[in-house]
Image (tube, rainbow, N blue to C red; front, side, top):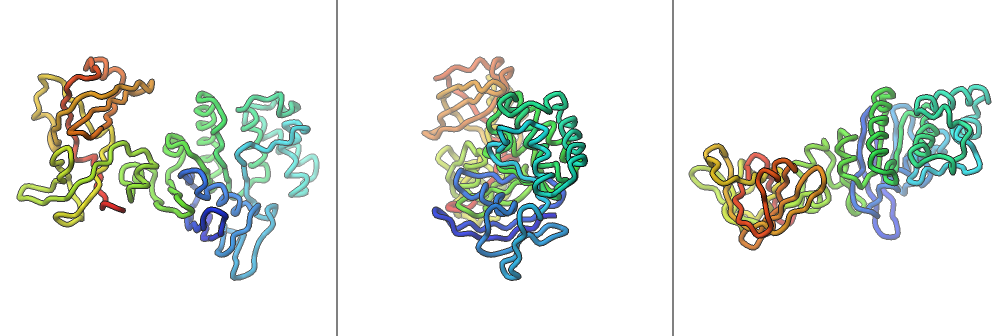
Amino acid sequence: MLDVDITKRLATLDLAVVFSLDAEVLALFGPSGSGKSMTLKMIAGIETPDRGHIRSAEHTFFDSGAGVNLAPQRRRVGYVPQHYALFPHLTALENVTFPLRKGLRWPAGRARDRAHELLEMFGLADRAHARPRQLSGGQQQRVSLGRALAGEPDILLLDEPFAALDAPIRAELRQEFRAIQQRLQIPVLFVTHDLEEAASLAGRMAVVIDGAVRQLDLTRTILDRPVDRQVAQFVGARNIVPGAVRRHSTGICADTPIGAIGIAATSLKDGARADIIIRPDAIRIIRPGRPLDQLRDATMVSGTISDLIDHGTRIAVFATVEGTLLEASLSPTAAGRLELRIGDPIQLAILQAYLHVIPAGA
């Protein structure tokens, strides 16, 4: 367990974060300069909060009211900084044993055995005597993770752990990381700017903006139901359409620049201004001749294809509807079947079940 409630005044913002986690992975996600890395450093004991507390299941790391501030080596926290921070003059084995010998004062034999165990776990047994410059980026990251885990920490902190790696190595390390976390069953807190990484690794996510946790929830919930417009933009909402709620005899809709859009439910009152968040996968592109009665609870709109962008695993289709640009998402196979071309007229079905409505200005 990790319980954090801290504040710290920084040069560019006042940081105030509150969250807790059990034996799970929590992602700190948000823009650069919002205080995510500083939060990790305060938990690790590298920086000191102005006020508040940091507690694990066993220890109080920091409590401004009680005058408690444990030294980093007493916190049983594994920490991987952004750039690995391996000692260039030490071998992989020596880098992993270093915190055990210097910080925890383990006997040399015990420290060496533990380091060999971790290098074996990360597939680096044959690189034990290589120095960082002789290792690939993925191997350096594995050594850094091994060093963080060497002292059998109660908590693991990772600051953008895979950011500097090529895509195939990132995918490989993510798999290894998931297996390690399931084995260790300890709280893991990691900073990332990569939405795909947060979604694939973290059961929950904290969106940190301007020094505060704006939303903390299941990762899927935040992606589907962001609490406000700014969170929506940071978690990749592609279509945010302004409108006004209108209740009528057969349901609820929002009057928007692209027409009246049917919505499943909202707590907003009749006439309230709102932002309608339409995920790209909530938009279906209608093939000519397809029976429209197959699409229930959908709003039909017409437009013109403005652009097509191939992202490899998906095709982004941009359509202009009544002067508003909407983005839909298709698989390459589906896009090929539709034979879409820029400038073609297009009909779109916006599915009610995948819409999210938030108050305007939220």
